[in-house]
Length: 307
Image 1 (tube, rainbow, N blue to C red):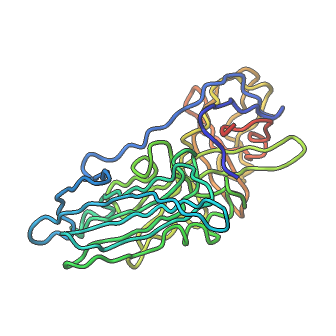
Image 2 (cartoon, helix red, strand yellow):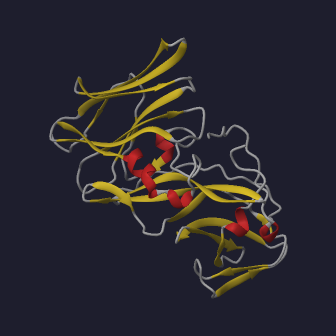
Image 3 (tube, one colour):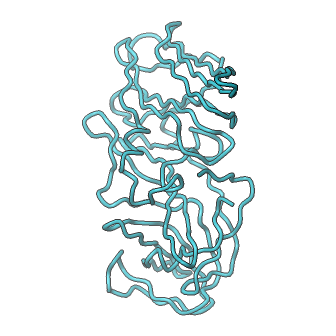
């Protein structure tokens, strides 16, 4: 199930924490200025030093759509082809029964600034939606050879993100603007990807949030950085007044009180953490005090950010 992001509806929170404001934060992925990154354009060749040795490599990709008919049904084939120094080093196709304006991206960045090797990400996805990836590869060009390091889609969609919810929404997503807006790094061997958290289903409804999920280089491949997934929330800004008094705690799952929020008090929702697959939300009040509360008290909703 995919949801179009063209119209955003403020989430209605449960009685436990109804926040009256309807301000929605639309994020922009920020890349550290010290990390060189390149968002390639189809059909446009760039010269980039990919392996830290010798002359710069000439790199270019194309993305083509073709239509075929099988058993009186129209199929659309989307093919991404990557060339380095004139040689085809990567080619993959996605075929669909319908054409949702599938897009192909090649994005080059530097996860580990100490190794002098650039990191190449190749993706295909439905650009009309905030959607799951059809293709997501992590690659490098080393000593004159193209290396497909990791099928990142397969890794991420193989249970790594189950705590976010077992649905199309509870997974890793392409963000507005494509791959360059969906992943980021500071060159510290970590990569941030955007995930959509599926928080709860009950008689009261359901809820979602978008947040950052950290991956870290381990033995040459990207693995989840934390045993208990945590990160910042980038789309879920319900700044406003609490509908009733609520207690916030010093740590996720802790019984140690951090502060109490009074009715009408303004708070900001800023982060998340899963412990034993239970969601906890980080809240900051006007005095900069931080506290945690169960996600179920916040995200039982009758509408979603994807409507």
